[in-house]
Length: 132
Image 1 (cartoon, one colour):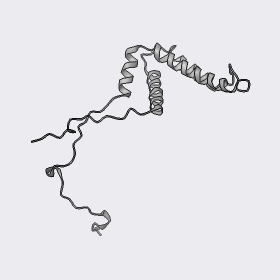
Image 2: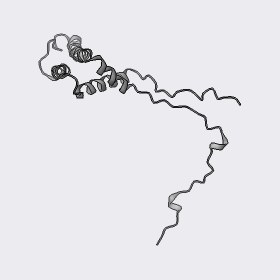
Image 3: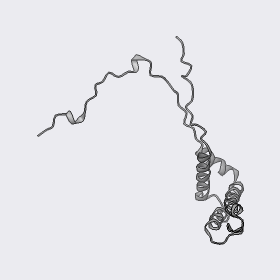
Image 4: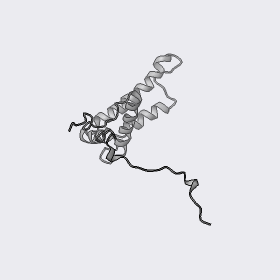
């Protein structure tokens, strides 16, 4: 009896791309912000970087330096959130990262065996007799 070569393969999600990485990064920040084990003063970093992004005060205004004006806002948010994650305890960051990247193992099998087929008949429920 030959074994199916696909029988023991794990089902894995694709790695995704840039958007999936950004969403995972935002979820990690959210999990760290809501974790009670993280120091409250450390949680000020991402909040302050978002406050700078939304505030009318700008270090490099877009009128004088159009490209740099947009990049400094993005850089402040990136630096603030990256610094926040790097200053959080590594064990807590690793715990939340594992939670976000959890892969559910499964075995793929082709439904080629006759024994697994169910002999059934489809019926529209509107055809069912009504009780009156």
